[in-house]
Length: 352
View 1 (spheres, helix red, strand yellow):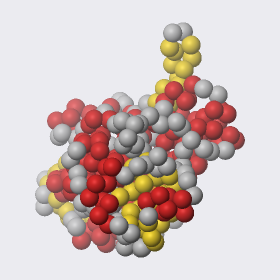
View 2 (cartoon, helix red, strand yellow):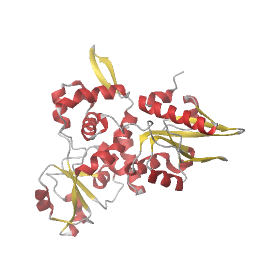
View 3 (cartoon, rainbow, N blue to C red):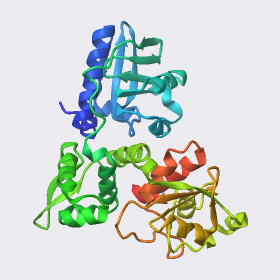
View 4 (cartoon, rainbow, N blue to C red):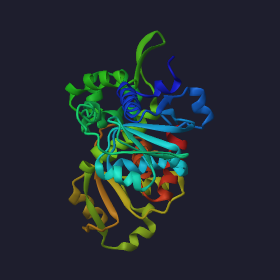
C-alpha cells in the first residue's frame, strides 16, 4: 500500500527513512512502524513527512517525522520553527547529523535518528541514546546538482515563474542566470525527485511543478545554507542615521528591498531593524546613493541579485521588493519571533 505521505517524500528521503527504521530496530529490538495517512491527518501532521509508531514491550508512542538528508546550523532554526511549540512530538530523521548539532538537539530535548541508528529519543517513558555507530557507507553526498548554487538559482526562477519550464532551455538559462548546459540535468533531477510531472494543457504536452510546498521548504533551507552566504556584499551604516526614520521614502531605483523591510512593506506588521537591499549595481554606487560607510555591525546589509527574471513590483512602483519566496526564506530562519510571524503571513498571502 502506498501511503499518502509517501508521495511527499522523494526517493532519497524514503531510503533514508527506511534505512533509519531498519537500523534502529536491528540495534534496539524495538518496533518502529510507519502509520498511514489517515493517522497522520488525525494527529494534525499537515507539516510532517510521515508518522511513526515506536513500541517496546507494553510502551508505545507516536512521532511526527521530519526527514532530511543532512542538516546544517543554518537550517536548524527553520526546522525547529516548523515543529513549533510541540517539538517533543517530533522525530528528526537524517542521513547524517554533525556531532555539534546532535549535542544541541539533545540539549534542547529534540528527538533525532540517523540512518546509522545513532539517536536520541525520549518520549512517553521510552528512552534511547545511541552515539557510537560509525558513519560509513550510509552517508551519501549531500545533494545532487539541483541543490548546489546553480541549481538553487534555477529553482528560484521556476518557482516564481513556473511557465519558464515550458519555454526553451536557452530562455530558462538566461532568466535564471545559470549555464545553458545545466538546464536539462536540472529538469531530469526535478522529475526524479517527484517535483515535476508531465501533462497536457489544451492538447499540448506541458511540464508542471508537483509537491510545491515541499519544494519551497527544501529551497528555503538550502538557500540559507548554500547560496545566501555567496551573495553578501557587506554590512554598512548610514552616515545620516536619521534617514532610517523615513526609510520608506528612500529612493530605491537601483535596488530592491529584501528581508525585514520587504516583510514590513508586504504585511505592515514589522518594524525593520536590519535593512537588507538587493542590487546588481556596483557596490560603490549604492554606497554613494545611500551615503553608506562600511561597518561590520551596521544595520544595512547589501546583497547581490542572482537572477535575471524581470520582476513585478509586488506592492507599487515606489516600494520595490524582492519576490515573496525570497523574503519568506530570509525571515522564517530568523531567531526573532516577529520575523517568523511575518514570514508566515507572507506565506499565507503570497505562497499558498
